[in-house]
Amino acid sequence: MSPPTSSNETVHSTPPSVRRGLSLTPTSRSLWTLRRSKTESRTQRLRSFAKDLMNCPRARAAANQRPSRRASSMLGKVQPAPPKFYDAIRALAKESREVSDLVDKFDWFLPFLDEIRSRRLSVNIGNKSSLPLEQWNEANARQAARALTMSLAMQIQPQTAVDEWILQSVAVKELVETEEHFRLLMESLTEELMKRVPWGMRLRAMIGAGVAMADLASDLLIVFTFHHEGSTTYRNTATGMIATSFGLQLMMIILVHGQGGPGVLLCEVAKLFSGLKPAFDAYAVGTGAERPAYAVFDPFTEMVGARMMELFSEAIPMAVLQIVFIIQARTVDPVVATSLLISALTAGYTAASVTYDFDTDPKRRLHEPDFYGFIPDSNFKRIVALNLLVLQSTLMLLLRATATALILKLGGIYLLAFIAIDMSLFFLFKVAHCDFLYWIPVESLLQNIGISVLMRSIFKVI
Image 1 (tube, rainbow, N blue to C red):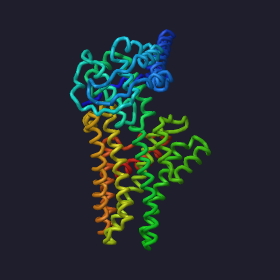
Image 2 (cartoon, helix red, strand yellow):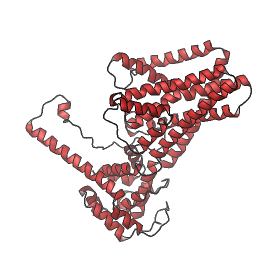
Image 3 (cartoon, rainbow, N blue to C red):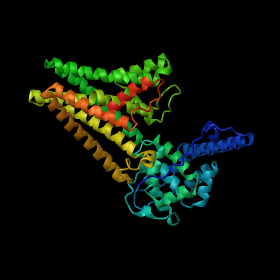
Image 4 (cartoon, helix red, strand yellow):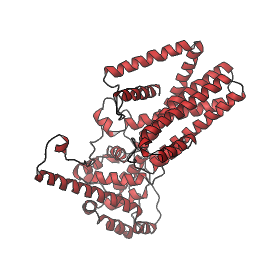
């Protein structure tokens, strides 16, 4: 099922007619400037309301007066909040005309905001989401609010979480179609929630950073194990893989932060060689850090790129090396087996996360519905799908690593021939479909070709 068209209000610095190469009359320019000013004001008001709803001392004080209630996901079993708490939310809503109109129009809208702020979870797998908007009551609104909070557990961007949530309810779809400010309000509230809830983007970023750091630690332990057992060839090969991983990540740091000056570069390099860069990247993503003016990528893209390079040059090759060692030794060393499992889980989790994020991206589903969309829209089914993707990716890596190790045992020439034929066919396919050049902005065609070969190879291996 394709997600609804996004209604994000993107404000451009130049009018549409100027971007098309046309000239503006003074009257049309004034009208465009006024429209842009109104759009910015509306967006700012809704974002301010979302932030105040989460932070306002009046709301927190009133919330403390609420009687304790069981966070039940069943409809009709939620006790209403006291009037003082609703008065606090109503006072905040008056500061935004768009929110105030919704509060006046719908009796259940204050409980709806109350439930969003409470941040309770609910896996929406019932059939109540088929109710039309005119039949909604407070219990239905609270259930929908908990479903929105649950969407945060599976997404990393506010717009994507809202898109997933809209697909689950007929009434919510009607709200988006009939109330022009409702979607932007939900995106503003979701953006604030993502900065506060411990699950969702923060949890996934921290898990990714944790497994990456554990993988690096296990690989270093493997190097010492090979050295202790006198396996010089395995030790040097493992050391070369780790060095290649650090080299590729260093190249990415220079590309992303090269315009930030020596101080910024030195700080990023220190994070890399201390082994703590995954943790710093996860913190930047989890706290919603903005992209610096000098940076080429935003923090999330940088984090994903670093993990991809680590998989390409360290986790996957190290898994092959460890399986070759096990085959040759004809025994399973506990340290080698543990490191192999960590490498496989690291690769499986990272690959599954990238697949999940690409497939659930509303823009990709809208423009390429034949390719994206195999993951269901239900929150519960998406949780199951992500876990199955991790399991499948982990087992697939172990299977392919074992096959590669067996080919390598036959002779290095066979493995090189297999890789050369496989990559050649892949690049020919990309060139034939005019999809070879990568999207990273660079100055020259030669640089673009080099980066394209590197990035296509990385994603092909992964």
